[in-house]
Image (cartoon, rainbow, N blue to C red):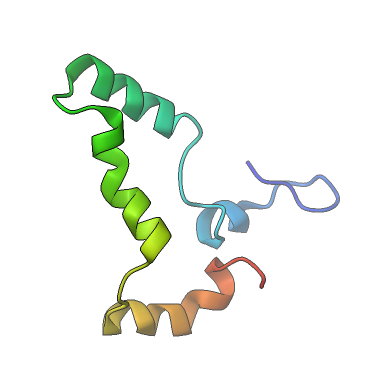
Length: 78
């Protein structure tokens, strides 16, 4: 749950902001499942995501349109 400056719940942040990217415990849960049932080490599983984060990716037309339409609601302030 996210709170506004007055301490009141701000449901918009959990639905449309850049903060709405996951659920607390997701990473720990996925890591545990991988450890118990996975066939690859964590560093190998994370490698593609790390590469995307470091190098970026080409934005297709659909994503470009969505960013134009919803970017101000979902991206963090510059």
